[in-house]
Length: 110
Length: 119
Image 1: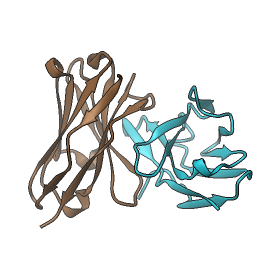
Image 2: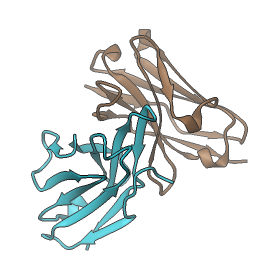
Image 3: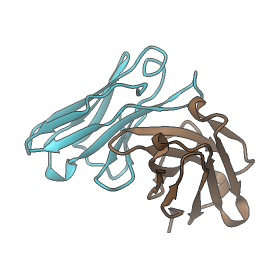
Image 4: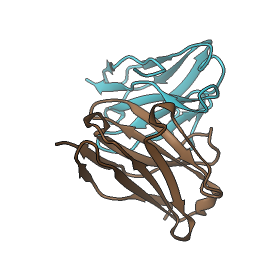
């Protein structure tokens, strides 16, 4: 059971906009920064978004992050086939003095 | 080349222990925290703990306390995670990853080490 909640799957067609949600509580998302990782098939994750809405250098501006209250979202505009991957939200939880993750969302490009 | 190179796959029996290594290269080993995470087949990521290579201080997630030991050897820029009393539920890919501070994102990952626990 993950501390943060993500939908297990999402899908879209090329060119579409897709949004992946990550929900938590006032003790985690409501208090800190959310990070988003992309995990391409068979590889280790890489960070896409840090501190809620900052793109890591080199990440296309098609990817954007946002946070409101106890939820966060990752949006992908102009969906491309190479975006097919697992997406994980994560954050540092001060009360646990450690990192917590969502269960991951598998994005399929139809 | 800046990288984290992990040891190879392991197969262990229930009740045994496993030790996975993570060798850093291309950067100053003691300047970054090393975290250990795992991913069971078809599941999400689970954070296990971190070690500060500069002083050896560690913190582990509550669900692993008493079973996990994280160490480092600064002379060879290598971090280790040792997980004891293995169960089938510990079958997973184990990753090491670095961060500049314990609560900053992981900017470099190893390629992962598959640990299979099976009788």
